[in-house]
Amino acid sequence: MSNKKEKRTITQLLLTSDGAVSVVVVLLGFLFGTLIIALVGRNPLNMYRALVQSLTGIYSRKGALTWNIRYVGEWLAYSVPYILCGLCMAFAARAGLFNIGGEGQYVIGMTVAQLVALTCVQIPGLHWIFAILCALLAGAVWGGVVGFLKAKYEVSEVVATIMLNYVALYLSRIITMAIPGTNTYKTVDYPATASIKWSVLEKLTNGSNLSLGFFFAIVAVLVYWFIMEKTNLGFGLRATGYNKDAARYAGIPVVTSIVLSMAISGAFAGLAGGSVALGSFKYGRVISSQDNYGFMGIAVALVGNNTAGGTLLAGLLFGLLHASQPLMQSRQIPKEITFIIQGLIVVFIALRDGLRIYLKWRIKNNEAKKAAKQEAAE
Image (cartoon, rainbow, N blue to C red):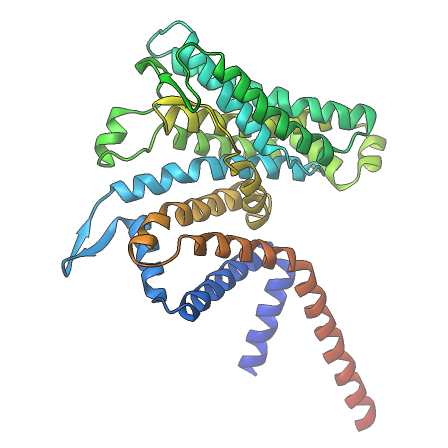
């Protein structure tokens, strides 16, 4: 009886809780990743050792346990763009939109941050603040344009954002190359007043790349949660996402909601671009291809079920996989295994509805069998 109750409880949990499904699919992703490593003749434990080293900073060196907090700092630094780009996708999704343009909004934010950092007046304490605010605003404008086209002229946000991703990439190259002192792949170094690296953080994390960007990401998560769960604006956005016609009938300004949702969504990605530009590099980059943080943000949002807390945890997970890549390579584990795990997690998340349909079918089938047995007994 207890086994049956446990099975029922697990089934009900998987049917009703998106969080439980996310945990299951993450575990499945790691399980299949482990099997793949074993099949190619490598030791799967080395992958988990690399993950633990990035997560805790603890590793074995010459038979003795050693701790270096620098690995933790690198993990948190890598997680920043995943968290922010995940919020970008999640915010639009809650309003019923599919923002596949997080990459373009990220690139525009990065480009504007670089431009402001290298050309504006170097006022200590204000220079980097202005650069980050401009990056955030640039991402909001880039996303807001798509929202306006969608709301006013019914232009597909998927098509518009895909096209604007390429516009952002090549516009970034044109703008950055126009900055004096720039060569084919980088600009001159930023002035010290433009950096969001904090000497205290560098000392605490033994010289890692952890910067103020991580705190921006935490604040962004709180802002996301507050807007969506505690404000009339968030209620209007969620209502629009559920049913536009019903929201319009209830007096919610649907056009404004769509434009605002895409603008705020783009602001998160723009903040990600500014944080990476001023926190991870000492110079501006002339990018020849996309960083793919915007696209990975889609996966992060899916795993996090478009919630603030879920997206934060999913972003930390993807950041952990990214930070562990060089450590895996040093242990003879191909770095591509992290991409395989990420891909498998997304595939399993996509199959979530199929799993629920199957579980519901099993419940109905079992109930039908019980009813048939009772009729036969009578």
